[in-house]
Length: 139
Image (cartoon, rainbow, N blue to C red; front, side, top):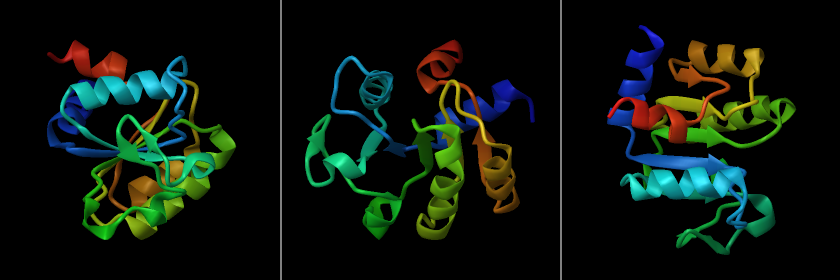
């Protein structure tokens, strides 16, 4: 599948996105991207252990992916973390999110080992890209 087809599939099939590393600070890229996605109609689930139990963008923040309720039906995990933190996040996502289809690593974030693990588990992976940039190109 070509990159454009993959991104179109993600855009069309995703309803709920867990944003790992979502900051409550409006000047941070994670906040801007999550707000954009929320404005596009996606349900955002913030994941940030430093802000667990609080709200970001009107949504309850979870400490980690395993704390997200099972009925949330997370389709995509969008990762705003250092590349060396990605492998653990991907492993947790695969183990705890039964409806997960897509792993998205933000600009500057790549991890070949984590991508290979996700792909071997049947997930579609995008690395070093941003949905706030990519999704509008398909409209």
